[in-house]
Length: 250
Ligand code: URA
Image (cartoon, rainbow, N blue to C red; front, top):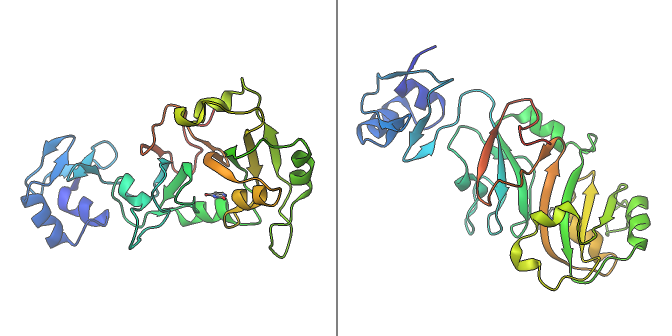
């Protein structure tokens, strides 16, 4: 199906029909890398790549991106003080982050315009697993495995749901996700993987705080069926097929 460039941009939420016409006239728009100067230019939204000021415009319909969030960005659509994760993804209508990672947390963050998908992933009833790589200030003790599996009191009305803690040996594959700067001088037991089924505020940090440990570095490696590809650099993004687990799932 072919549609006009100005309609495509307006449907994608870039602006009104007259606003996008002036954006096109300013030569800010490319189709497959070639400047498009006429609003009536026809394109195929399924196969052509449209960009405004170099940023790819999201396809129409539901779209989900998997972002490797760097530290320093807030998981919000707008923020007055800090850069937001939206600055790292292609422009598109109604996109929002699926849940939050703290500003200093890195790792897998989904950004979508699919409200139903987000609801399914975030609903407390869904118990969607989230796995975090955690670097602790001091080594974890074996006793934490049972404590976290039973649920810990982190100061909320109810203890946390059962969570799985893995204390990583030095040859654990997850070490590949740990940035170089944290690898030197690590003690056995300082790096762990924690899988939780909830998404309470600062949950991972509060769970370790409850056992007298502080989190020195935190990275989300997976969220339900979505897995952070080892090859995806910080700040980079991949497009996931709507309604399907990402290609990154191993
Ligand atoms: N738990 C935290 O403490 N912080 C995050 O960003 C995510 C989970």
